Amino acid sequence: MLDAWAVPPHVDVLFVGAHPDDEYQSLSTFGQWRERLGLTTGVVTVTRGEGGGNAAGPEKGAALGRIREAEEREAVAHAGIRDVFYLDRPDFWYTLSAPLTARAWGPGTLRRLVETIRATRPSTVVTMDPRPFNQHGGHQLAARLAVEAFRLAADPAAFPGTGAPWRATRLLTQNWGLRGPVGPGCATAGLRDPATGLPQLGVWAGAWSPRHRATWAQRERDAERVYRTQGFAARPAKVAGPFGCDWFSVVFDGGRPVPAPVVEQAGLRPLYAEFRDWARATGLPWLANRAQPDYPEPPATTLPVAGRAPVLDGVASPGEYAGQALHLAHWEGERCPAADCAATARLTRHGADLYVQVEVTDEARGAALDECERHWRTDAVEIALDPRGDSDDTSTTFKLGVLPYTAEGGPCAARDADARQGPAPRVGVASAAHDGGYGVEVRIPFALLPAPPTALRANVLVYDSDTGDRTGQTRLAWSPFGSAQADPYVWGRVGRG
Image 1 (cartoon, helix red, strand yellow):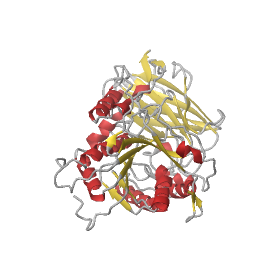
Image 2: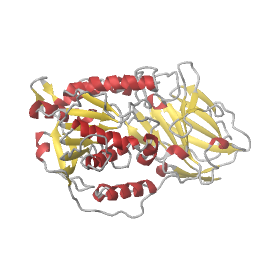
Image 3: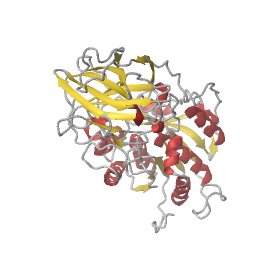
Image 4: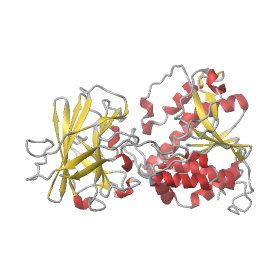
């Protein structure tokens, strides 16, 4: 219940996101709507972001959540936003699965969101993109909940005791994947999304703010840099054009769904079939159009058996790894020359243990961290294993992050974004620095995997940072498609040697 609000604040626009900072890419739009049209915006944030990373200090968990809430409130004020409402659902490790996130957030989240809409009485609800490919499961679920709550808030039979029914008129979803024209004409381009067929609303980010004597794109950058824990303070202070539009798919208008042609897809993998079923059940089947991309054939290798156990020293010595070298390709972030960031990996098994050796070319060291849990913020290696080869999300996989060096000097390893996140005491790890890079070697007992390795799939990833500000720059992967660290569908096949 919202009893703490003596007078529930009315807003014209309500944004629904999963984490503090999810709204930042729409702040130029919300600021313009307030300055030009007098429309007030409120923000609903389902979690406080306590499960995310911290580029600004050592805080994590609840302490990090308090900092991120303060950052969010300071940032949205740049767009004239005062009202931020938290639903206090748990934030946990990075996942691409909306169903997994739903199990963590629990069924009461929808009720709380309906209650918030009824209390604030917006005309327009704005949310994230609900489609599943290459997107955080929390973002997907926040959008799904917004779609459902948009309708249920108007239903007198839904959730009695949560306020008087309220019918909002318009629902928009962010569409940051749309590539439209730049310049002020983008706002009148009349585009439709190539996948869903839905009409697009464009709001030009380059519009001038007389009050702030800056473009709204600049105001948004000023707000973005407030999210210091997320590394956004490292982004350039000034932005320059040409500027494009903030794009939003118009899902409901006049309180009714905006129809579009339905394009059926065959051969859907379970995660995409579940999304299709949700879209059908909500009366918006076109949201699932082309939701599953054409996955490329994953790479494959064999796992040779070593005659003797490799010496855990960070180096692939002669005779230790008989299998092929796996070359890692650019996956995400800035592209860089091979002399600065390149990597190969080798796998072998001995007895009941898997050995992985990764050789990395890297001209400059990143920040030396004092803990392993946020390895993607500096130079690091990640090993992802799906023992049965049929996982839909990482909760049934084994994922390990490895820092080749720490503030204390030596390497460390910790499990990340799987069902046993945290220390990995039975894992062996070693590193060896050399001119122009480093090597990492890891021993993983097969007994630590969530199931016997009957149809093993794997990915090996390298994170590269040449700065000391705890922000990553370049990511490499053996199988580099989509969200390579969190989508088991793309991981390579590992057969027995």
